[in-house]
Amino acid sequence: MAKTNDSTDTDTDTGTDTATDTAVTDEAAATSALSTAPAEDRPGDGQAVPGSFGGVRKPGLLGALAWTARETTGWVRWVWRQLTSMRVALILLFLLSLATIPGSLVPQTSVDALKAQQWKDDHETLASVYDKLGLFHVYSSVWFSAIYILLFVSLIGCIVPRTWQFVGQLRGRPPAAPRHLTRMPAHATWHTDAKPEQVVAAAEKLLKRRRFRVERSEGSVGAEKGYLREAGNLLFHISLIVLLVAFASGQLWKSEGGKLVVEGDGFSNTLTQYDDFKSGSLFRPDDLDKFSFYLDSFSGTYERTGPQKGTPRDYAAHITYYEGADGPARKATIKVNEPLETGGSKVYLIGHGYAPMVTVKDGRGNIAFRGPMASLPLDSNVTETSVAKVGDYRDKDGNKTQIGFKGNFVPTLDLKTGMMASQFPALDNPALVLTAYSGSLGTDSGMPQNVYQLDVTKMKQFKEKDGSPFAKLLKVGDTMTLPDGGSLHFDTIKEWATFQVSQKPGNELALTGAVAALLGLAGSLFIQRRRVWVRATAGADGRTVVELAGLGRSESARLPEELASLAAALQPDAPPAAAETAEAAEAAEAADEAASGPASDPAESSEGARA
Image: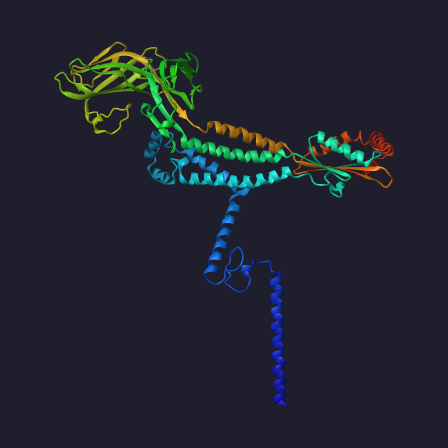
């Protein structure tokens, strides 16, 4: 018995375990069938890898290659969807606007190299950090270019699918009328004695006259209007791409240079003629427009009295210019904000000053230098620092040396102030105060020098007989005799002007993009896309039931007004039934009486108002 019992117990336990295993297997299969997890996360044959984009990695080299290709493709698609989403495009546009802030606050090397270098000298600690971050050349830095290119790609990725979708919408037809038009936000219903076919035909004609796209079906008309709203969105986004392209082309092919021209001298648009020049990375010297000009004269007027005394009222550079190698001579006047336009270049007037004309003779009486002194304005009254460098000079004994002059030129001198500073920018009382040095100018070293500065580290200042520094105040026509026998004669005064020649090929394209962006934005804001349906069916009383409904793609207060206008325009062809008109008139009359009649009991009036 014991043995039999043991055997029975064993068989019983085995059967229970088998049933339990079967139940677990069925539950797992049911759970697997209901699961929404990706296939690679479910248990099964092969190696499941978390984060994959479908399937499992099969054994062997081919399985690994197939899985790697699937993963790579999946990640590329995911990154592309994120990059081309409107959210990322807005983020990149915001980052681009933030990236331009350092370009406005930190001096840029491409704009003013001297100012940028001065800033570095004044902030040595920050300069090294800013230099590593590229803050002195923001618009050509790697991080700015990365944001710029990503925004460009994102906008293209947004526009292309939306353009195809819009093309499909243009080719599509308005949808048929829904079953329950009275559930629409704006709708109208009335009965008429006109035939349903007549009402539908009249509605179709009316909607076409209102420039709706119309699709007629049995017993109803569907119409749609406002497709230009999406066209405005696309135009706005395309205009942003145009602006980016214009900005990029302007930076890559631009050229900009400055030139100081004295009255009577000229300028030819070649690289060797510029005092300073900067250009884009794709610029070539052959891209410069071929033109030249001479500065005939310069005129300036200033406020003579009042709190704005000395303020310039008019600057005008009168020039003669030539287009091309053998173009005819033409006269023109360049003023502030009124540049000369020739070819694709613009010549701006950006500065003005005076050039003292001097003649320097050496100790033997030979002319060593004749021409204008380099003069740089120091204040609004055109007090100038003046420098002249004479590299080929011989003293009275015939010894070869170099000589330099520096001092100040003042267009209006007033000795009563006790300062060598001009009191007015016009040439009312011009004077030139100079001192002289002899020695080495440093020009033979081959290193470039600033023409407005005189390096006196290897020079000695001339002295008077009593040992005091040698200096003279000169008027036009005066001569300063040097202790070594040389001399400087103050011949006359000429005016000079500084010009900036700019050539930016993307300006016209940028203007076109900006105008198109404004038009597209206006279209997307003010054009409302909406649908209208008109249905005419025979009612139970034998009259025709007219249903009119509208639906806008966005919230608009004009849709009910437009629907009311369509209903009013349709009613001459589908007039309301007489009984319905009488009921409406009685209801209106009752409403007028209730509004104008006196209330006998305030409580009743209040209760009626609540009702």
